[in-house]
Amino acid sequence: MTTAGLLFMLISVGGVTALFVWCLYKVLTGKKPADHLAHIEPVEQADIEKR
Amino acid sequence: MTQKKTEAWSSKIGVIMAVAGSAVGLGNFLRFPGLVADQETGGGAFLIAYFISLLVVGLPICWVEWTLGRFGGTQGFNSSPGIFHAIIRKPWGKYLGLLGFIIPVGVYFYYVVIESWCLGYAWQSFSGALDLGKDPAAYAAHFAQTTGIKADGAILGFTAPFLFFIGVFILNFVIIYRGLSKGIEFICNWGMPLLIIIALILLVRVLTLGTPDPTKPELSVWNGLGYMWNPHDIAKGLSNPAVWLKAASQIFFTLSVGFGVIITYASYLKKNDDVVLSGLTATAANEFCEVGLGGLITVPAAFAFLGASAVAGGTFALGFNVLPQVFASMPYGHLFGGLFFTLLFIAAITSSLSMLQPGIAFLEEGLGLDRRGSVALLGLVTAVGCTLVVWFSEGLMALSTVDFWIGDIGIFLQGTLLIYVFNFAFGTERGWTEAHHGADIRIPRVFKFVIRWVSPAFLTAIFAMFVLKNVAGWNFSLTTPLFTPTDHILDLIGGPGHPASGVAQLTAFFLLLFTLFSALLIQRAGKRWDAR
Image (tube, rainbow over all chains, first blue to last red; front, side, top):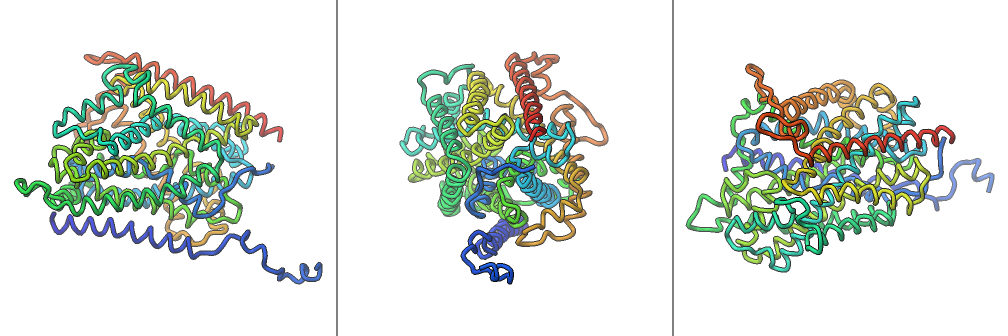
């Protein structure tokens, strides 16, 4: 394999791997769906007064 | 106009896995490596064209599909005809979604057959029945026996290939009957990580093969990687239209864009669910499997054992003739071969399941059928299509006819249609805002220009090139262009020294009937939607 071939391989494989890992990290550490926050107490004044 | 949703994804990672599972298929591990390794149109020029196509066609259309799909879902629609009906709001609008129904169902006709080959090969590898020695002819004969390529109806009856086909066909419908979350999402949540783990095991095995035969030092994994990744003449390659056509086509097919699947999958998202990061993650997962795993496994292994001549034979030859020989030549080859074909089977089933869901969604919302009814009707339609493919197996004529007219032409048409509908019917500005609703990350602004102008122009040019090459038979020369009708056309109308194929004509007639039948269903669905 030539040096250029090695570079092409490393950049291509490394690029898509880095992108995939970054995306997974963002998905797994991102905001949680609103449904999962349903237990949180109401913060709106109107909701508090309603209670 | 909304209706009560009966199905939804149970998690964000679930829909990402499902879309990635739909995209990751046989092409990732067999077609892509062969394209890069092609000494005429592969190498560095192909990779540059491939990544440019990813940026100007793949990712933009992917975001467009996710966005339109989620929008359609909020309007109460899950199928392409329904979503186009909601977007365009004209009587003819729903018919633009016709391809989003017939493409996935049509591709399923033959994809499930190939899927059954993978399962059969996996079983035979694990059991040692695929170890046929060193004679390449034995593997070719085994492939012919599996596919029935020598004569029509050769595998029908109480034969192993037919039983595998029946088993895989039923398995798909059992899973799809379980529903979106318990069926597709469950399988993809387990299948995709398993696929990546198997691929990593195979990757380690291949990269540590060294020089399998010390008497042939030129046949090594290192040289196999060089054969595949060495860039050749980049400037010459980039000036060759064939390189761009192959690169753009691969991006298009590998990401499942224009397939009718992503738009349906995204329609089951909630209004505030992210589509930007999810679309990017599914795309990245596919690219990781294709470039990062597929690009390092099959071609280097084949080269190290059998040399360059073994690599240049097309997708089926590499997967079902060459690689079984390679596995038979290595220690514990039956185990690694079994794992490889299991990997292909997982990649295939996560894709074939995704081909059924758009059909199920349309039959449910268009005809008002329940799950049982829609599964039964779709099962009947696909059984007829699959029977055609399995029965007329000589030369794989029925398979290649459906593949060309539905799997190639149809997907290009639908992808082109999607980008135009997004820009001109939905509106680029509105679409851009819609895409960012609930988004976890922002799309770089340059993509707004790309989606508006570059993607449609690039896609139209590539589609025109595809038709010129594969229908008109263009020789890719701009200075001395020659046009010779391709086999796909000659099979239908015949020509000098090339009689028309009755099987190709019958298959094309069946596809025409299927298209008309689908259009009638859409007309009936339209009345139902108008009355809602």
